[in-house]
Length: 528
Image (cartoon, rainbow, N blue to C red; front, side, top):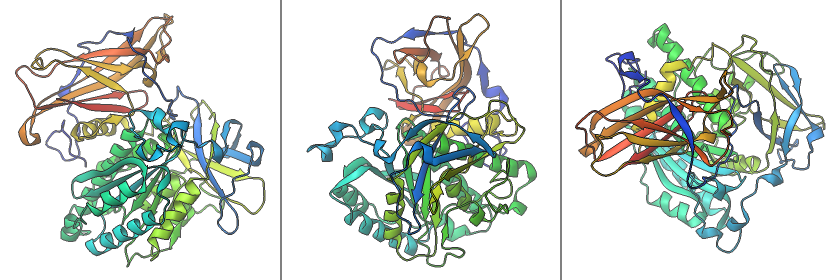
């Protein structure tokens, strides 16, 4: 399905095994860094991080946020089993650092690679989807987004970034800022793009699956780029959303890969605390006008939610199912797009953060359903619907999807920050091993029989020449080993790896990516 830098002739093959070189620098010792690097803990759903983090919004009968609840007001169930809350933050805890709230707040720089700048504040990601939306509807959506921003205060309540996706491009129009005027200027300077692939192919040929691929890659890139920001990430997707592939047009193995990719992207969004709110400006959009639950997505029949273990993407790989799974909602067939954007953000700004420890033993179900209740009557709760347990063999993003993610990181031209990495490369020395340094606290460590620790990564490098032409590449698996006394969660420790491009390759730009095999988190940067 997804073409990759490491690909064979088959459209759905990702990485031929002959290109995967293991063990050339397999013994890597964790060393102490000369300067301490700040770490921000990003909750994940791996077996080593036994905490599931939920962002929960609660509204009254009129749809107004309820913000005065306590820990005792909530009940959380995973696969119908009651879970004890191990952490609880009310909406007031979603705060910016003091340095970002004073007179100089408009000039504050919010860099995703420096997560301390965001504190525990939620952030807003505005995505203008011009890939899956016809020109006239994109123009309307752009005007509505402008009207929404004009109605906001000069100093926005939380850091906000503006992105767009169109044919084979994902572009940042404005970085994270609280300056409303900076976002308006960026929006005005960005012309509306025509959705050529949508217009040319529509629902025929391979158009839908190509647009689905581009949309999922944009979601993955955005999530990996912002993963180290600690707070909730409210993604406002303004556009048609990616299409569902026709199951009659792809064979069984390809359909499985599509489904596994959807599971992988879903967990990435949940692990990074991304809640998707989608507003479709398409004037002819059919169906219900608001989708807030899985039941309204028409793939579950249980009256009280999904039955234990039901996989939301087992029957169809539908964009409409992605938002409710993350705790968000879909708005269609409405002509008040700017008001719907504002409404979604009002809810997101009033969220609670709950954490619980799931069962350790796998039960054979790839999908774990979550249900959140509030004991106060008459209130509506919105939270993520569930996640794919990494303990289940059926989760199976497996090697193909993970390698696709790594390939996506290598094709990208922005930093991926889920792992904090640095590269030591002297000009003209690309024939020599490049030292790649990964913060130890970002890796997934397991205990070895001798009391030490080990972590496993896949590391890749690609050299690009003029016009972004690929000149050479290499990928290998490595392990980092730390002796027993080492505190691998100490922010002053790092793991060093070495990688060498094929002899004689000297690119204008070298792209290096590292994937932690325990969590599938990726860090990627460019070296010039």
